[in-house]
Image (tube, rainbow, N blue to C red; front, side):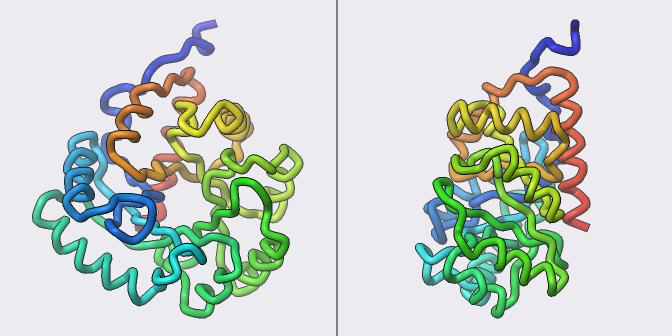
Length: 242
């Protein structure tokens, strides 16, 4: 009976946490617009217990200027500023849209989550790119491991789609704020299903603004089993940073 009671996350739940998906790198996508706001966020996150963060700016056709060279330069400059205000360890990766530019980014060299072969990938929320399966197959042949970002948010995805992805050995990343209903009830329901069925491998904030993160984080309520599952995903995140 008591296993079904829900609770807010404990204050120390994120102590020592590693975030593996966020848009804190300023001025490069629809995330943080300025270095000042990004630095404010890092200081606030450090106070909440975050110790490591993998910054994952969008790589997609809508952000034509984002490429490995330009984003790496922006990251190195931002990292120097971040070191002045906090002790959070930063790493650069990217969130790659499975679109017409995906294979172009592949040829340039992926910015991976683990510095090796884990590639964070996303699709349109409304439809699955017709060539997406071939793209993922091609990079897997080269030894890369696709990590599907926030699968619970894809409106087109059914349970059978999730099982197909798992059968192909893609890994899954949960958005923490999906558990607060930040992206609507359908995403909330899917998130709980995928969490309870053990589909997820990692968890990220997908943070685009500090205010939204803080507001929705306080709204999360989980039963004890789901809280333990989320804690395990946070431990998995740390393995990406080794």
